[in-house]
Length: 439
Image 1 (cartoon, helix red, strand yellow):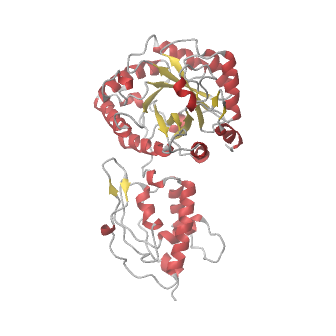
Image 2 (tube, helix red, strand yellow):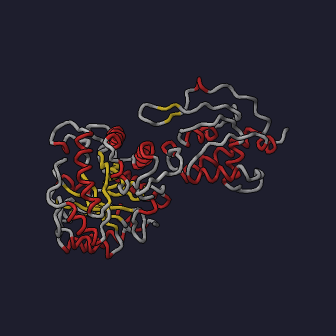
Image 3 (spheres, rainbow, N blue to C red):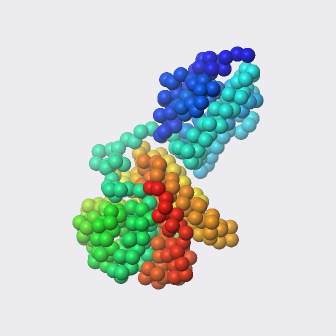
């Protein structure tokens, strides 16, 4: 039988540009001798090097890292030296594996014993990828950020001192009583929440002062959502309100909510230009007050597709010559349901337009029991979303559950009671899960 190790090391790898931890591992693999299969648990870089060496593929540009990962993750004993074609770009911007007809036959048969080694390494790589990239199909292949003059880099945006990436949406009202604030700020602290989104009535000053004071005092980063009627202009002096709450510790100001819904457009069909006009005017007022304006806040089940609406909104800003408004902006994300990893799609869309990432802050999220979701499913999915924040991507700042309380927290809309963690009839097991989960 031949020497598989020597055979693997003799293959020249055409390097792609996988991002993040996988990229570092691939770089290490090209300079790390292959470990012996009998040497116990080899380093991930060594396993990756052996497995990468089992396939030769052409260089790819502007493809997601997954296109390259699949070239070796999908290896099997029937043809470990397969020449893989580039992934197929779909109309929505995603990449899918090439059809079977696009994969030529194996360049050569596997040497005896090589199949087993490739299979073992493949399984280890799959496990490693599952750990570092829970959904590699959505991981964008990107160049480093190109930050223009006057724009903030990701590292320049303010973060809470003990940042867990765990967010929570406050009660669905624009003001709360002090006893409600004291109770639920403590509950958030016990759940290791470090970001809190709350509603502010237009440019009102004062109604949320005590809430902001208590959030800041307890090390929780406040995110102020300017509550308006649809896309109507903000009532009052928005710049003065931003200055007031900026002085108290608020940096992030979300503007408008789910503009891809008819409901948020007074019954009219969603319109990108209508949204961009409203957002631009408000963003200028926020910037003038020293705040960071939030962009997006799109519904994942909107009357207009959220991803397409985001692409078109960024294009509209560019056409108007107003991309400078994004120099200190951030992307507000609503990632409901089991698709809480869709922040990767949002980041890829932003990068394709700007050449850099914006901070992505989930300002609404969650999943709720129903016909197809059991209470156990809810706890598992929400816990997974929060657990991901321990090793989150650099641009993903926070995942935020909607909502902490409703009737118990001074809310007034009974439609939201089933969404709340704290309800008149009891407490969601998600609360205990967060209390016990490591941050």
